[in-house]
Length: 249
Image (cartoon, rainbow, N blue to C red; front, top):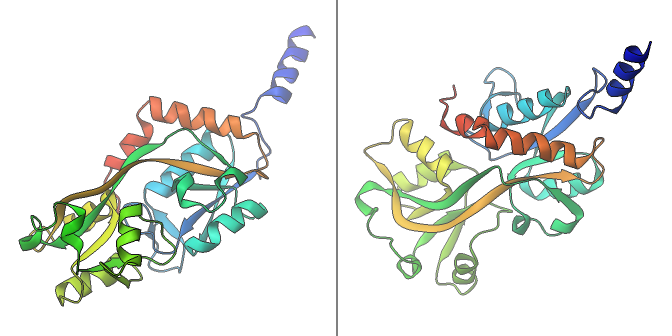
């Protein structure tokens, strides 16, 4: 009887045991592209694979929970997190949010960088910020960029061109309607590897290096420190690094 009571008590107290229908709602931004998000071509907005999908599913699996993916414009993700309509937003930073203190932040999940995608012949043309003066730079609506880039855009030293995604920017690059696209290095490297090895390259300039996190709603249905523990373990075991190095289809 004593061992039975101990077992029951452990089950009740264990942070990793939840009802079978418990679900964590993960957001992904509309402009997300491979390898972060790969959509099912037969079903609109259904996530088929990618780093974000695997990351979310593994976090949930460690917590014995299910996953639901919610597709949102970047500008709507933070309000949805604050309202508790979304539980977790991964691959983000506090300085990309208007009110970061309204959210709980995970341990660092991996490091990234903002780089410039350019035509191969121009890869050595951009070494410092001043090399962007007078240039047309493709940017995404709702994104936060390095303060120097923002300052140069606001001062008219750089002309920003809003694009809907990498494919849109690549098309404009091919037509010489922009000089460069600024985006995640992981996304740009993946695009180059998809058949643009000869025509496109990353410029020498590294705009910014930064740590990336997951942000949780303070209305999340489980203790945030439990998710922290799972993510910390996934980082320490190399599980997240393996995801970043995997080939997704």
